[in-house]
Image 1 (cartoon, helix red, strand yellow):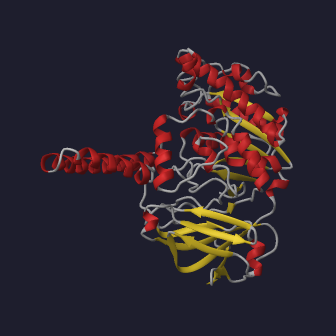
Image 2: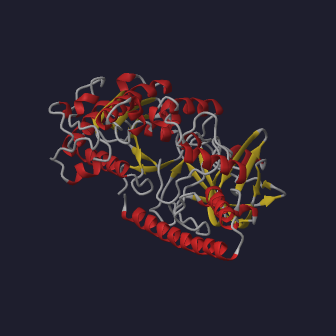
Length: 471
């Protein structure tokens, strides 16, 4: 966990303790001054309100502006909204990623229900949700609506919030990166599918490299009568299998899928002391070759099976030179704070300094966020607005390819093949969802219970482009 994430959690817990202290004082007052049933009733109402409206992990104020920088040569156009329709605008030809910069302010209902920006062009509609109580700069994804914008046929309206100030359209013209050879770096099984199933299933050629077995937090499998170590080994075997087999659903053959077999949450420690071995925290295993038996090629780490940083980097060098990708797809080390995700990107970039093969560019993704664990907000199938950026990141170039309804269904089915996303919800989470369904109007997809079926199966995928010749 990063220092910033720790600071955010510390502040969140401090505020929560303060709120609990105030509630306790009020409850004691009810017990002392009111009828006997007033305190239990108030406690129930407070709990229901917390579950419905305050259970989100939002570590910033919804009144904060998103603070993005884009390259100086980015095309920026002013837009005008006339009677619910965006006036026609001249756009460059080709594939475009489009983000509408606007200011949103929630109405009083927007403090109880998720504020929404709605879009429609003909029969094609979209909905993008934002934080309850929003009052600041946000970026709505208009990718896929270029032709409707050119014709002045894109309708835009809001629910539970209103637009304020000027509208600015940021236009990013790109080549179709799906025509390239791509290599997806997945810290864990399912990361490739969550971030890039639409991309790799449409790419001219794709390879998937999964770094870890994903064996930890295997309590669900102890119900089978297994002890902690045996459950972790079973989970590691299942997720290893998932990482090799699921990509075939997206057209990637097994000979282009590799499992490296390192251990969860050990990658940062491996980087600190590159020659030392770091076995599993839970399974007791310390030989990565147990997860590599189905790999299509021999790798440097197969010699001794040692889970070391030196072996990991050497494996990645060998894979870069074997698959020779034009594009590598990997976690964004600033936006995605998961320790294994950050270390995976660091390992790949170290391998690039040693490899004779150099890709043209990197595509960076984020499956986890520092500040908001509901992003992308709103129901499945909606578009992906830009994530929170409270601290201004370095200039970014987004690329947001569109997924058809058929491709979104295929992506949902790919997630359904991942054992880790099929673990039943805890009773507490199931009850919280029922309360939010009734009181906050939230909805979840039928394709799966895990939160990633809502967050990852979207109208768009979202990447940030980093060219290899950039500093």
